[in-house]
Amino acid sequence: MRVEVWVDVLCPWGYIGKRRLERALARFDGRAEVEIVWRSLELDPGSPRTTSGPIADLLVEYGVYESRRAALRQFEMITYLGQQEGLELRPASTVPANSFDAHRLLHLAAERGQADAMIERLLRGCLTENVDVADHAALVSLGREVGLDHAEMWAVLDSDAYAGSVLADRDLARERGLRGSPTFVVGGQAAPLGAPSVDTLLELLGQPVG
Image (cartoon, rainbow, N blue to C red; front, side, top):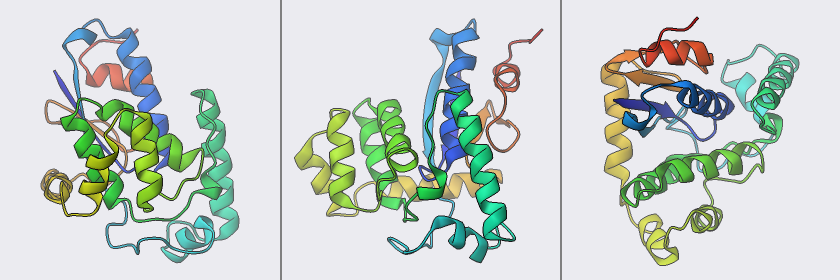
């Protein structure tokens, strides 16, 4: 069974969703048969490399929230929900950055059998440690922690390697009508947008709950 997860490393809901998926799989009878495929979904593919200023103000500018106060209230809720999953999220301090290169390294990690470790490190780096994931030196540092080769990562980042893989994920998401991070898909069926509950994920996997 293949579980495809479309996620942006800038999305706190993606980190919460990853934890809930892990809890669902721990209860899933067929866990040994599950293959997880992490797919790239950029929430703002046209964004500049790095944007100055607080992310709350940027989201208001984009029309995601009506005011800075509303954005900060949402961040408080996200922080609380993250705590319920054992995460220390700092969404208000997230560095607004273009995540394209981070996703290219994720595809490299997938080829090296380290996709899960890499997406975990990218999410923690971006959302807990507030690393600038458009900064190549920062990305290489994160990748080294999960065992990727230093020289190979620099070679990837200094070229357009894996750009086609990121764009292919983007095209596939568009074809399937997937627009949000995270989106979980099993057998062509997508879970509700966002970070579904553990029970919802179990039902998506085909295991009755209750």
